[in-house]
Amino acid sequence: MNEPQELNPMERQVVAVFVDGVRVLGLPRSIGEIYGLLFISRSPMSLDDLVLRLKISKGSASQGLRMLKSLGAVRESEVIGTTERRTYYEPAVELKRLVGGFIREQVRPHLESGKSKIKRLSETATDIEDPEQRKFVSERLDRLDNWMRSGGRVLPLLQKILGQ
Amino acid sequence: MNEPQELNPMERQVVAVFVDGVRVLGLPRSIGEIYGLLFISRSPMSLDDLVLRLKISKGSASQGLRMLKSLGAVRESEVIGTTERRTYYEPAVELKRLVGGFIREQVRPHLESGKSKIKRLSETATDIEDPEQRKFVSERLDRLDNWMRSGGRVLPLLQKILGQ
DNA sequence: TTTTTTGTTCAAATAATATTGAACAATCGC
DNA sequence: GCGATTGTTCAATATTATTTGAACAAAAAA
Image 1 (cartoon, each protein chain N blue to C red):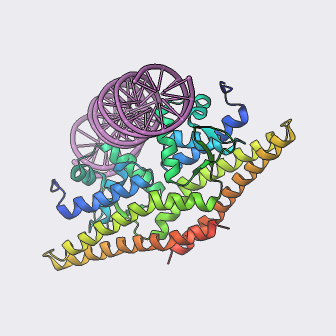
Image 2 (tube, rainbow over the protein chains, first blue to last red):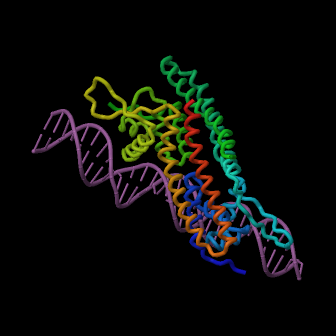
Image 3 (cartoon, rainbow over the protein chains, first blue to last red):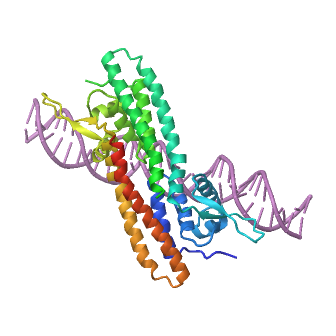
């Protein structure tokens, strides 16, 4: 009932590509390992499968799967016709969905919190005594606000374009 | 000849916004501190100014400025009419330029190396014995390749849109 | 030439982040 | 109920990334 231990070369290299990929996105390596292995596997895998094949701890696998679920990057697969208690996972492979999840979970929250911080700063800026200084700071804060707006406008566009 | 030490509240908060911002982009905090302070300062600053006001080491400031230069996010400012030896820096504040630099330095290289890794894997995949398995792996690698292409296509668009 | 100023480099120290694993909960089957 | 299975949580630990600071180089001033 044990899984074959080692990853084969193809699996190893695909996993490496994803490990690299998620690092660019600022996500932990285990996320890339898990998603990468699911991506190149023909059948859904359980938490235990991942632990055995990737040689990571149950804790890592559990947390990694949780994050991948929240990103919409994996789904629980219906294993039909068995009295199987374990849940099996398969990767979501539509780029649109992946990008959407990343934007929703990782990008939007920062944009929002940034916007509100800047708004508060802009209000503070009106208190600055020196008119020259006040003008300068207000201008810069406006610019910052514009950046955020641009970001906000670009995201849905991104999703649209990447959905073919 | 010493700088005023502490950042004032406005400066502190603007710096904090940028520290947050660069973290999302996977860049070190010092980058955000340096750029943030330059962004909200009316006059260009030297390396020493940054060290004094941000209380960071000369090493950090030097490395941070180097990276910001490579990203096109700061420029050396011409301080006219003085026999000043120090170089002074001012921020590049055009979103287009910042996005362009980030894409060029941080995004493109990863996209390129990813593409070539996948290309190599696709060639390897043709050696897989089992036809079903070969088909599956090839499909997935194709998909991966498509993701990369989509990414490549989206970048110039991004730059265009963010350039107003 | 010697000293001072300005800035860079990089090994070591530190800080930030991710992973582990043991304890715990929940659910199933007996 | 009781043991076995599956999965979660989180404090301790390991790993990775960043920052520091001392040594160094280059160029100007004395």
